[in-house]
Length: 77
Image 1 (tube, rainbow, N blue to C red):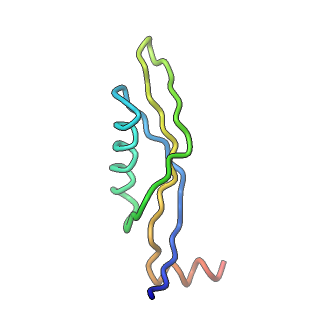
Image 2: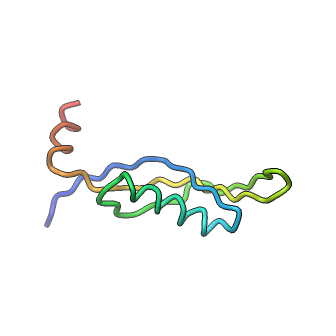
């Protein structure tokens, strides 16, 4: 059995198309800076009006696997 450690961060994605698209936007952007993404949890959905148009907003917690160097430094804090 492997022993892995994961960290989660909260992000918000927005879209003028749909909640699903807002999730895709958020995850795609997270992939650009966070490595080893493993899963996400949608914690909130809401909408807004921007200049008369609907804006879909989704809050996510995305989780990624820490590498060995991060596990050591995280444990020491």
